[in-house]
Length: 347
Image (cartoon, rainbow, N blue to C red):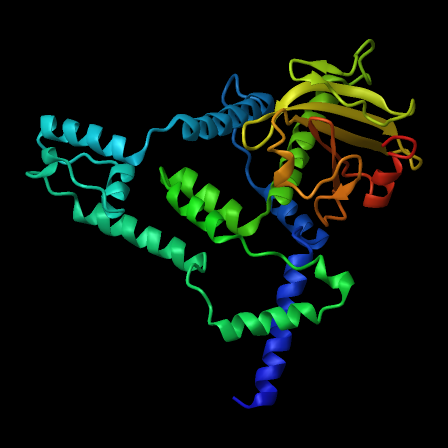
C-alpha cells in the first residue's frame, strides 16, 4: 500500500471514528423502522398480575440486589477454602468461578483438593475469558514512539476540539474491572461500563433512565394533571435538599427517593409545564447525597457552576455540586441552552 493510500485510509478511519463518538443515539429513520417492525409483531398476552410498573420495580430491585451483592461478597480465597471443604464432603469438584479465579491468580490449593482435580473445561473457559478481557482493555503498553506520536497529535488539536477527546481509563481502572470478575454477569456489566463510559456518562445515563421511568408512571397515574398539595422533598434523612431553581410555571409531579444505577439513593423532583407549542415539557432534578465528599470527586463538577455531563442534544444533562449534594438537571424536551436558562436567577 502506498503512502498516499495509507494517509487516505487513516484520515477516513479517524473521521469515521470521530463521527461515531459524537452521537450515541440512532437516527430518526432507524428508530421509525424499528418501531414499525415492533408494532407489526404479534403481541402475546401479558401474564395476569404483570404490568409495566411491576416489571420496572423488579428491574430496579434486581439491579440494586446485584450491586449490593458485590459490597458484601467475601474474598476469592475465602470462597476457595469453603468450596474446597464442600467438594471434599461431596467427593467431587464443585468449585465456582470465583474459586477457580483464585487458583488462576496463584492462590495455594487447599489440602481438600489434593484428590479432586479442577474441571479442565471450566479452567480453560475462565482463562480464555480473562485473556480476552485483558486483550480488549489494551493492557499491553504501546511503544513509546507511538505514545509520543499520539501526544503530538493531541497537542496540535485546536482548543475547541480538545474537550471532545475521550481519555483512556487508567491502569488502575482496568485492574479493578478485571479483578471484580466475581460472577460473569456482574463482570461483563462492569467491564463494559469501564470501557465505554466515564463516571459523568454513567451518571447522565442513570438520571435519564430514572426521569423516563418516573415521568411515564406520573403521566399514567396522574391523568387529570398535577396532584394538589404535593410538596417538594426539601428535607430528608440526608439533610436539607437543595432548592430546585424553578418558577411558578412548573408543576411538581414527582417527589421521591429513587436509586441510581449503582444502587445509591437520590432525591428526585420531577416538574412539568405546558410549552409554547402546546406540548408538555418536563424537567428532572436529581440530588445525590455526598456526606463524605467522595462522590463529587468522581465527576467533573464544581460548586455552584453548571457543567454539561453529556453531548446528547436530544436529552441534555447538566450537573453541579451544592454543599454535600451532587446535583443534576435533565430534560428530553429542552436543549442544553434552554435547560441552563431555567437556572437564571438560581445558582
